[in-house]
Image (cartoon, rainbow, N blue to C red; front, side, top):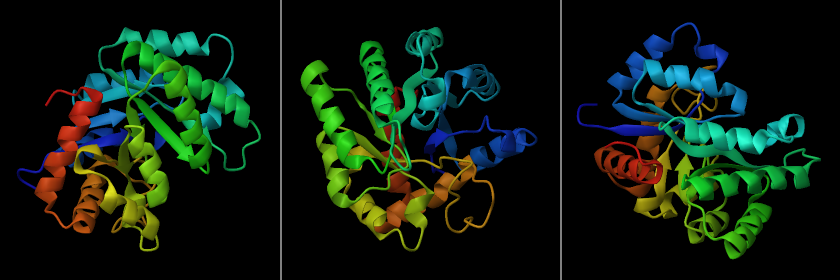
Length: 264
């Protein structure tokens, strides 16, 4: 892996499954050429634990936000201000999120929209990108973003762990978003995701693990995904695009540093 420098743009290494061996996990990601990690945030209460991880591993930068699946339980008066204050509190906060819409089995669609728009506004105010989770909600998501753009102006960000069709992918490219591919792009039957990975312009492409979830082939049978495995995602995307791993790594690392303002 000499010469390969990759950024895993979406991790959750604060989860309990990493508690016992995080130093070993870090050793493996460093050996695999992972030079930066962007740690996502599911809810603001995670912030101190994520901050402590970044204190231990200086290549870790992070986000703060509220995940759409936690909106029903946690979206209340004061949370918006809490997210904004936490984002301002540490220079290593490089994004707002993960936020977005998850309409799979959801009965609180309007509440999710409200929480998402509030976090878009914070991102805009603080000039931070948003990390967007979108499940079973591509059309309403695109509509919401277009209307937000018309009212308040654009926000930069990434469609994380992207699983949409090529047509849906184009909607978000047209809105200026980056598209990030996870282990799902390595799955045999993920033909639409693979087609999307071929069509995204080189300057909008990112890779991630979303660990501990969605371990890529050839690690798919493992119960825990980890940052070192982002190389398998990168290899698959490079193969799909007909370029070398070195070129794909250089491209996606430059993109991640540009979007998140990471040190090169």
